[in-house]
Image 1 (cartoon, rainbow, N blue to C red):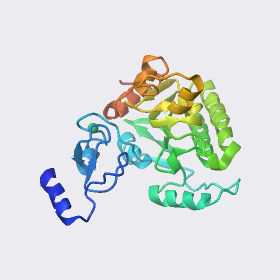
Image 2 (spheres, protein in one colour):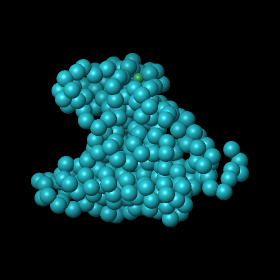
Image 3 (cartoon, rainbow, N blue to C red):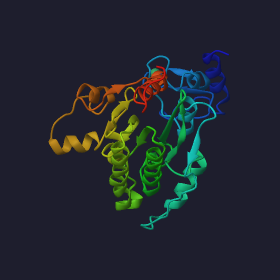
Image 4 (cartoon, rainbow, N blue to C red):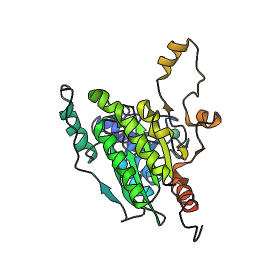
Length: 290
Ligand SMILES: [Zn+2]
């Protein structure tokens, strides 16, 4: 059925959401969705088949952690770590644990990061995949702990560590306990690096705040998806502080690549192949095939 006729049916019935116009950046389980960048309307299934990349303008939609596992990790090889750790409420923040529970039910995750081991085109790796659908991917004590344990596991197994970041920054409801995760994860990465092991950071939209200022930016290779927003403080805060207008493309992956903060931008469709090649090239004990 053509898009036009579906829309006209929707208009006539005035019920049953087909196009969700309010959730521009989300990917609801509705029949159709509108690209927030070029405003074209697509069948949701069509976008999913296209790895959630707009066929018209290449806009990369946000993905859930499990969706990334399904497109990045070899089928049947993923084994999750630490999926039962739960945060406490150290500052007695009102409704905090209730919100955690709601997001947990919504995403099927215990926290805003999914960690585990698996293979990428036959190469064994440990991965951490942040999910911005869980408390905007903010980093609290459990996110930091899961990432740290995953890095330590990669060190123990002597394999590369790959992280896909997506985060609004440190989690304010856990105060300084959130901030200390920046140091904790960085120390674990240093120990991993001291063993000569590879760490690849893949920044996806958005990667901001304390996450951008710690593990996300210290990869042996710092990669991003196209058009990802990456930065520490927000545009308005910086403009008010430095009293200057910032360039329009400031804090985009493309701007950061042009200014030396990124090593490469990989399209989602080529991410798996290219990262597998990098891992293979860095494999200890030589390359058997490329
Ligand atoms: Zn588009």
